[in-house]
Image 1 (cartoon, rainbow, N blue to C red):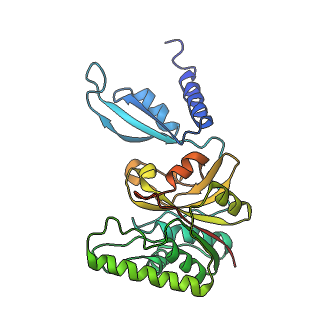
Image 2 (image 1 turned 180 degrees about the horizontal axis):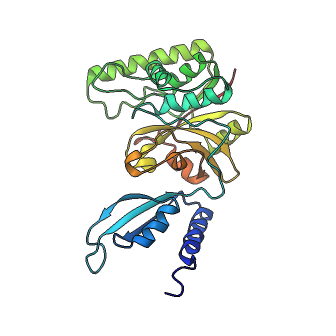
Image 3 (image 1 turned 90 degrees about the horizontal axis):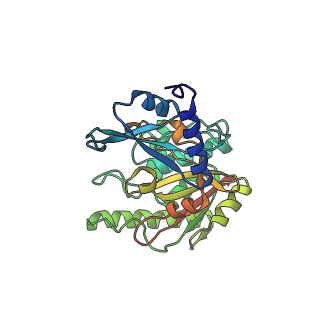
Length: 288
């Protein structure tokens, strides 16, 4: 009891977070007894968010609560690149594009109307069984038409995101939409690199004052095997700093968990691929 109110628990927790961050960990997770109100309060005050419950977790049958925290080190949340949270499940690409537009044009203010407009301009599927995602050529074209300079990196020549599409009609629409995007990209003179990008490509673009829209697997970000777009906004020598427009309200996430996230280089390159073929795609964006 004598040591109970000296703040030792908070110091140990901070030390664990620092050690995990220095060992290139993106997250720290823990379990705590559901009836341990004091420890729960400490974790929540330290920024941990509840993930779920594990019944009969302890020897006496007590339930555990699972918590998680995004590790930031000394990286601040606020940056010069404005952050915008997506309002629809399928608009991650357009939201990243809007953040880049707001960065290079301080008079531009992202809003849900422009979010949907850019999605309609860049999506592979429209008016089908469900909302479609955005592929690199469509996003690059939309960015160019919005006043940005764009350059594409893509590791695959053919049509993208067709592996799980069973409907022939839907496949045909997706393929035709992508043909249109590629023709327009060629018309606008948007450079295309048909190869996987490297961490050096991302770092060089950032060093040149550009931002980079990067395709990642949603599995490492929020546990779903879906394509997802994030915006690379900085490089601190060990991490790529990203804005992730998806804020998981059900997991009690806030902008603190999504803005200016420091991702170690190895983890970044591991997450920056999608599908069985390991598709890599990115668009560098800058002033035109």
